[in-house]
Length: 476
Image (cartoon, one colour):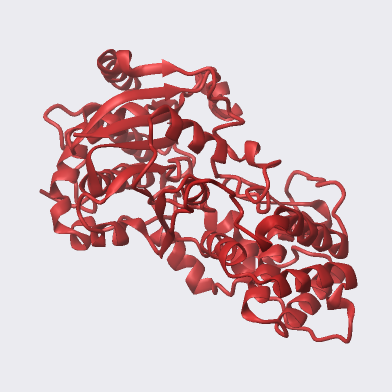
């Protein structure tokens, strides 16, 4: 058995590689899973995205746009009677699963690679469990007196190549004064003030997060030869940061006596593991978790090291560090190189075999390689990315099966994708792989409204909706 670095493209008995092959195999797999698909009207895109967090105290502070809502976690835990024990989220992001679980009295472990996610989770814990009344009063003083505008102490704003020109000169100077003044506070207040700054960076910049990259406003000077983008009003630094500090103060007004999430139940403990779940999951013990709730990066070319570059730069990530983060991420961008998975964990040979035996996926991979050979793909890294995504996900699924207790539930939010006209049923492919690795597919909950394809693909291949789903698997 070979690692994905060396897996031959024709690894199944009969080599498939056309769109008609993919459609036929997809139809066959759909017939097998047909009874598992449940269109769930209550699962709106608002619920299965960050949108529902926008008005919710605490969760609204930082707009982690790839997050799902706290209400979704509560809904699923209620529907499937997840009421005690320990929860795991191997792609913790901004910590939604962890904080909801904790508020329900469940202990929760999270794994997160990106420093921005780690910073959000750790700072919320500090505000919830370590802040004193004096610390809160200090935040109030900052918002009222605008401490950063007092005798000037500036610390140069760290930048990356992809963040230069992100702010007006006036805003950049204000950030540097703010960072300089923050250094005079105790470590708890420093963390909260730094977090408030992270929360407003995008709004005060000439950028907007747009999936695979940062979109640049015409005022940035970085739009030569590109379509003109007008972000609209960019708020003044003082107003943006004061509003954010005040929002945090409003949401934590009751923390003087209790926690973010008042409850009759005890508040569950949260543990955060920093790093890649491919490396951390194998270190966790067998059969200790009562449920897993997660949403991995989708196989959609989104590069979080670019979209969160402003935050990563402020947190001191270097150019080399940014590149290392990109390669440690789950393979979801065209720049990800193949990982030698068996060198990480030799026991994953069973997981890799499950991928090689998945006929629909292998047909997709063969088709994409053919498209690459014929010079049709708009990026030659797509076949490598799709291949890496499913092999790595299989290893993660195998580890999730190992660490779950018997009969425990796994909930996974994911999107289907399309490349070169080939619709990739991520939901069915991963569910079939999961069934070979110790899971039973309880159901695949489908959002009522599917996701459309890009205008480019629609022009070439016609409009076809893609399913957005929540997989519900039970550990056998």
